Image (cartoon, one colour):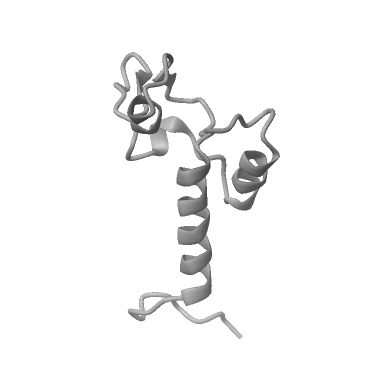
Length: 90
């Protein structure tokens, strides 16, 4: 677990993404949109005392951010494999 404000690795990972990865964007967060709070499964699994997070909190889980950065980089480097992208106009 890291902290966006104090962990340079977490901050660096967040900076590599096209936009900040928030708790509400994660499939490991089970919150309610109405109350905006919910448990983070990473924190719950570690038995953190404070495993409930606010949905608009920046993700501070290095494992999740590394996974997201890898997905983003792979997606960007692969291009379109199914032909749905149009080529640049001349």
